[in-house]
Length: 350
Ligand code: IPM
Ligand code: MG
Image (cartoon, rainbow, N blue to C red):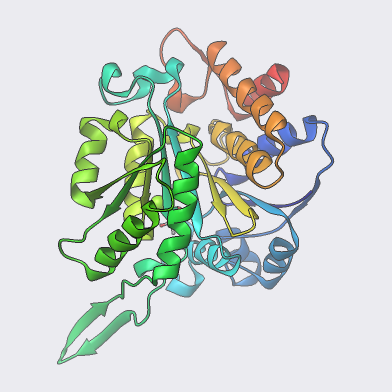
């Protein structure tokens, strides 16, 4: 079980240290090797996704990532920005299926900005296509045309790209409440008319799953109006980027949410859904639970170690029940702890 560990930037190294400690505490034999991705890689090599990292990531069974980016690298040309490293590794490893669960832990119900009765028991899975769409479409650029600047991007999907992410979503729904909502903008965009058509065709292969369709603007509204109507949502790269941030906030803290990005053989990249939080980097206060839960997803999806995955998830639930909270989920009456102490608490619970 070879893991490529990419701590990244900002709070990345701090939260990753705790996830690595948790993995080491399991009775499993991992080989872990670290490499650079993002801003730290730009500083060291000039490239956000250096060849050495690519080599290690390709040879590994799974990649565990902290977070990338920060204001320090904002002014760099586009191809050197840390985000380009993230997009590069997703594309090169063919990680087309991004699974982003939004689960509300009962102990954290007050952390949500929505009323407890709207979000209590919330458990949504967003399946986001990750290697296509307007994110990667050509042509793209900013040019001068007819004496003024002109910016353009291209949205496109092939039916095979839509079908393979559709299958992942239908299969996921099968293991849950068997309801799948496909999100598009077919009233305006042809690409997403094709998306809807292909999803409807696929539904014939999954008669046990109830498929519905929703326009993306309505989906954004429904997520804050009545989020519990959703079980699994499937959508393209850009809509999925936006809706998954929205869904994560229903749960009160993005600091709790893991994610998995999988290829066709369950090789995966696992990372917290949150960013590098440069404002609190180096202070030892970041919440390591999303990274620890991402490691649990890795145990489940890439290594088929369901029991170990549940042990880690159980330990996280236990520390919440014990009242340990990092700053992002703190409320009066609970015990505020830092990154390392939260890791200690998870290890003790394990
Ligand atoms: C995400 C992030 C990335 C994305 C950025 C950092 C390129 O927002 O993983 O959701 O847009 O995919
Ligand atoms: Mg995003």
